[in-house]
Length: 259
Image 1 (cartoon, one colour):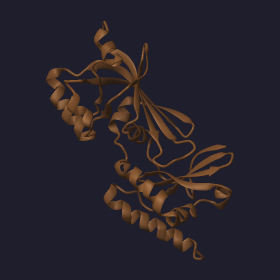
Image 2 (cartoon, rainbow, N blue to C red; image 1 turned 60 degrees about the horizontal axis):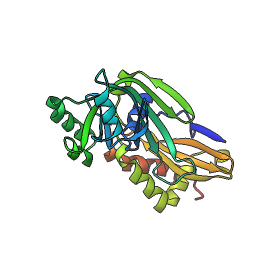
Image 3 (spheres, rainbow, N blue to C red; image 1 turned 90 degrees about the horizontal axis):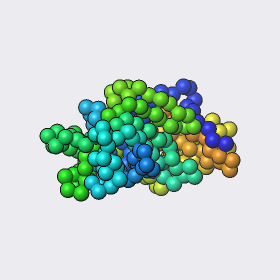
Image 4 (cartoon, rainbow, N blue to C red; image 1 turned 45 degrees about the horizontal axis):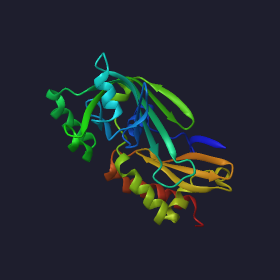
């Protein structure tokens, strides 16, 4: 039994599909597939604020070699990014996004500006190797597909590029790991917001966190159920997270006076 994410109570707000795709695409686990290339390593990747999809790959690798050898100067390719839960779960893959289009080398005249835009979105060490052992490529985006909760959604590339990653994406892993390891009482309070019949016989684990609230995983012998526990009001950034969590926990305590 595997269930998609449902609100724990009244219909909960949640990120749009383009926003979720941008959030998933910000995760580091990625691979490139192309004709004759099955899951080649990507050193780094990002979608910049201006909507440019950039990749750093080894200069002597098969992707860069295929791009250089292409008769048309570009290479039809697919970038697969996988989003893993930050805590140990039986099914740790939360979502995947497929970005497909055509790879071309970034023109040397544009490389400095592109690297700065890359660093603004994802300040990774691999950028320091560009021009030496690594090459910067651009993906001219043609198709975007989001796979999540057992469903596959095709997105308009323009909608994807116009969206932004969730504002809590950078702090999500640390928050959920701390909750899972050090605050079982708070996790139990969050679980109290889930209908009892959904939790019966299961183990509740933190699955996700975004500006709209928590996602919980109820692991049961026959599978799992994912549910959403929303904040009273969505947050706009990490600076609002502490107060939102406290209000949510206080509401849970009030509804469980015997705890």
